[in-house]
Length: 192
Length: 106
Image 1 (cartoon, each protein chain N blue to C red):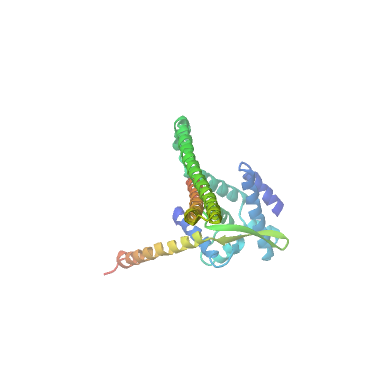
Image 2: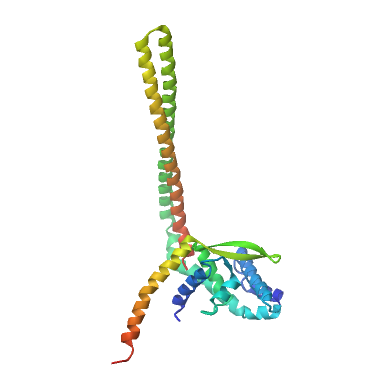
């Protein structure tokens, strides 16, 4: 059998699988044959070295079936499907609640930023007022407002850095939660 | 050999074959040959399983006008090998006991 015949036979045997699986498999065996030929085998020898098409197809289908079956027994699937009216609204509800909390946290963060901005404006205003009083010769009032302005400025700067830290934390929390959710579903497929 | 046992062993074998250098399918089979013979059809699902579990990554390299798939071990894969080695130190001790006491002698 030559390479083309071999690959066509394998393709026919695994045709029930998704196209991407079929393509990957054919690429894999194509590569194996090419590597063997580089080692000095002829095309015929390389193909026969791989074993019979029946063996390959049955082993491949068996493995794929194993992966699908072992990840969840049939009764569990049936139960899961029947239970959709129960767990689906629950999941959706919980999901919405969690997202709302997350969004609320971001809202709090935004209001903190706004506070920071307000403090910054107060700082500038205070200093300007102070300068006005300086010009007017009212030194004690000048000192008061400049002092007040500087305090607001300091608070504003501190708040700004605090907000940046909180923002980073929220982003990380979001990413980590997404990973956590993904891994719950991902691991079910990978276990075989 | 027990099928499940062999499968677990072969998974780690393949990881070991790519531990210190990226390698490709046929080379992995050749590297393992002095110790254990596996066929392409056995190797293929192993590679897919290892990739799904993030023990290795795949990338294509051009070779003689065609694309060859190379497999690269991840940190998780390295840890898997180390865990396996630790498990088997224990198994080796038990094996020694079985051989020493479990075989017929005075």
